[in-house]
Structure formats: structure tokens, C-alpha cells
Image 1 (cartoon, rainbow, N blue to C red):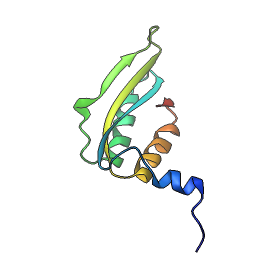
Image 2: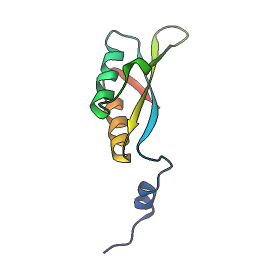
Image 3: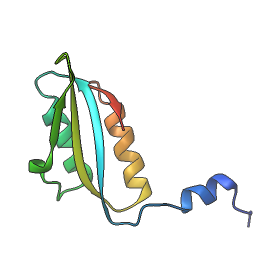
Length: 96
């Protein structure tokens, strides 16, 4: 049996208690379908996701849209995969 590395320990130690409501801000170019795409992904990872809680904020120039979703996360793995899925979506520019 090997000794856990610092990376392994960091993965196991979390500041988040699961399950937890977790806000995620997603930004992309303001185009038709952006909010729907983000909502669809949120539902994949949290079947109880309530789309009425979405907060939208346009950039000053109106070109970009910030979409804040609040999902129930149940594990670090789920949260990591949600970030990866959102980050790789072609409509998404930034995930915070």
C-alpha cells in the first residue's frame, strides 16, 4: 500500500460539505440558446435544478452574458465534471 501524496490529500480534503448548494457563474457571448444549453447541463448533473433561480447579467456593451446557476453538488467528482462539461461547451467562454 502506498502513502498518499499531497495531491491525494488535497483531493480528499474539501472546504465544501456535501451535499451543498453551489453557485457557478458561466459567461459566454450573448446568443440564442446559451441559457438553454447551460440549463440542460445543470439538469444533467442536478436533476432537482430549479431554472427559476438562474440570474442573468449582461456585459456593459451587451455582447456577453453572465449566467449564474446554483446546483446541488453531492461530491467533488460531480463538481469537477460539471466544471469540465461547462468549460468545454462551445458557447461558453469562462466558468467561475
